[in-house]
Length: 418
Image (cartoon, rainbow, N blue to C red; front, side):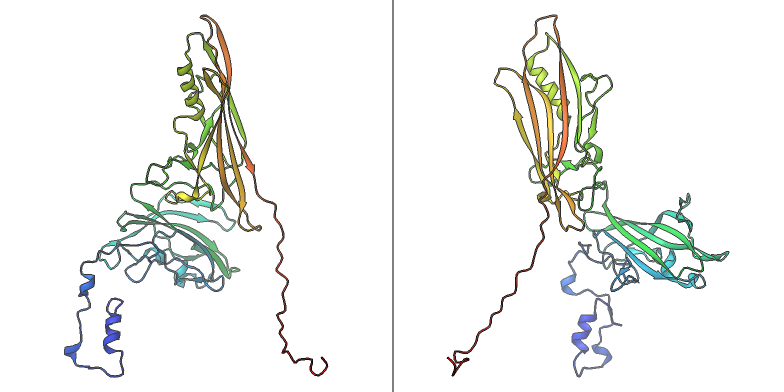
């Protein structure tokens, strides 16, 4: 029996015009490995279709038209989101496999390609959607809900499926879960729109939330992080704690505001501050370090993501933060303000431009500190601000070059007139 493993070998053996049909010459042991494959360790690689017991993990998508095609395999580590249209009818809804939960979870995934180790697809959540669009999350997820006709409606129709795959750094799948959105259709419905999605998470890691795909979305936090020597970008798992500024408090006391931070949101200009009361016992060096920690926080980042979906391993998609210092010439200078300027531009098509950060500058302004006599007090205002600047070039219409006529006539074309 031809299989995917022995097909090429059988084709070379029996694909010619004549071949020997003696049973002794047939290789019936299809499970034997080729010598070249004996020492090969199978693992999933990027983009390789995820194999199941019967074929591959299906991720329906539109191919030529908007109709769903079930022949699209899900690629390993390839996050996808598709929408397509499916023909349905109330009378035949129980016979349409593609609108049933069983169609998407009845086949086990192979942990690695060509392996006997299988991973079950578990049901993570089920959301039921009514005819008017209201959605309700069910408490029990272990119940298989199949399409059925009830009161002129066909209920438990699959409107959406979201797969979540957990894998190891060795390219092995260890968990697979599916979330469903089930709905109902009436007799007037001739088709439905289904949505499918798949995402991947490495084991013992947390997925880093994005702030846009690809460009930044106004109101979402600016993504930032650090880059150790010879490594990618390291980010805080809390997306609201990656890039922050000083948060104002009701008391306006800097000592009380120590540790209180607010996230920098894309497109939102912000300003905050507090008052620092100093006495004659305070020394310049200690005050300088205290104010720097107050303005920059415990972990001020080194890089900012250019796009809302910039990956940590793509270092070229991250913008380094430039530091500037403005100070006066004196023996003791203390920082009194931190100003962050984020320059961004519109990137891509004019129909759907994407916000892209191209430069980030952090300016620390210092002021001269004069030692106070014992028993005297002074209040210094400390400010922190961030503002966004759009440096996009104005859109200019483009015109195609005027066509040129490259006509060459024979030298005697006008003979005998010339």
